[in-house]
Image 1 (cartoon, rainbow, N blue to C red):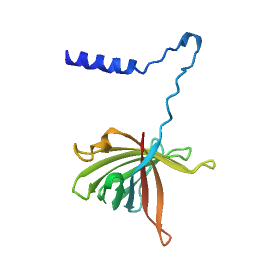
Image 2: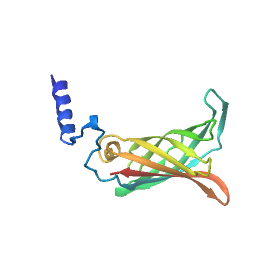
Image 3: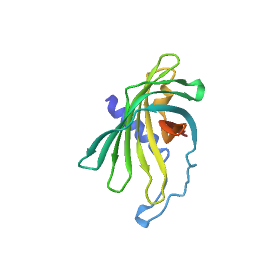
Image 4: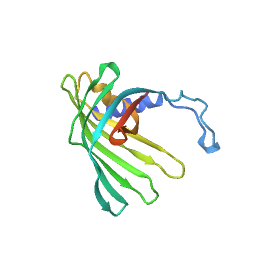
Length: 176
């Protein structure tokens, strides 16, 4: 019974945003909600080891990048270290696009461990040059659970020290 009541509550909340559109006539909605905006939520400097090549596979060339550490800062005083032990698993497709899936964790200055699952694509083909991701945070309830309650979009850029590639800078933007 509780499940039915919960389902009805969700349905009625969705109906409160409904529009009157005659789809049989090909009408378009008349209400334009505001476009989403973003704000920088967290910036991480993630140190890495060289790629471990897995090789050609069923869907393309596979490799992974071991994550060795790093540090981060973010809004509302969020800061701490990136934990060693995660990795960025990569698949380079036949069309040259790189699919990325990283799972790693961070520890805040107050000792809270937060898991990050970051997926996305890196496109350096046909004049394109971008890496866009969708980071998802898994924080314990409490001070940092706001990370669990929002959608984020991210970027990844290489970081060099005296010409040597040794880290990436990951920025996650909260979608509002």
